[in-house]
Image 1 (cartoon, one colour):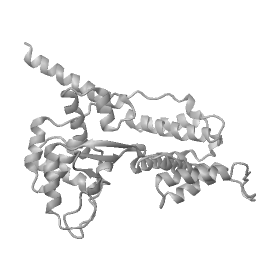
Image 2 (cartoon, helix red, strand yellow; image 1 turned 45 degrees about the vertical axis):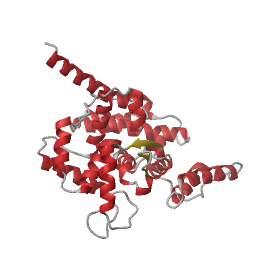
Image 3 (tube, rainbow, N blue to C red; image 1 turned 30 degrees about the horizontal axis):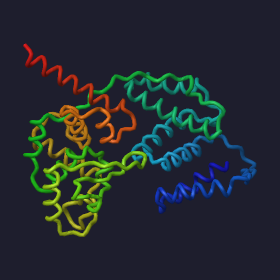
Image 4 (tube, rainbow, N blue to C red; image 1 turned 90 degrees about the vertical axis):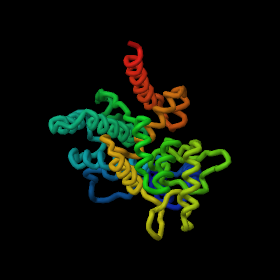
Length: 329
């Protein structure tokens, strides 16, 4: 009950306090309430299903841990669907309830990757409930993970990258394309950047990645050139690195950036879908092809696990194999 109140307070405070201040507030609340016993007020009505309130607390806790907005939205969607179907108190849910729920999706013919995502989310939720002592034991302990084939991370060929460059119609599009290619940034990381975040002397930018972790990314000569030209062409006073074309020149949103890449791909006549993360894949692939180590690429991209980066390495080995078959006859 005490932890529940602390999480609710921190969630409200996160709207106007920095992450550092939130941590300080957590420490103060935990110290102040250490010897305090908190009990819920007695009511005549019994709680039929406490899962919705526990989901809200779980999401608030994950938000404080630094989960991205997209991750939180996916957690929320999956858990609310589970709640609507199962409709039980969290302490009453067992492995059989979960199996029936997963079987419903399996019969509907959903992909293994979708089932794997559902299982991963439920495991995270029930592990949190167990750690917070809302339940004695997670029902997900008996649920096995589903094996999913590793996706080959598509990247742009050198020719395709040049085609995108030729498809750029203005200096803003060129600056955005070269920035994403040089830095390998995630969409959320780039969209939040301000002009002041760039260290022109060092040719680097400090981005705030997943889990509120900072890391440096670097600008090559082409990216610096087009960014400077783009910024010189602007007449607005918005601190955002990328802004909308039309007045009042607001910060360019996620969808705005996605539309630019999609339009570039259409103009270039590429058969594959072009999106911001495709440039991130391309950056990783080019780094590996040019001799960067797996650990260097992992650090640069901000991957928590080397397993994620390994996918790029496997793709690079396939590229090498195809090159060998082509040239060693």
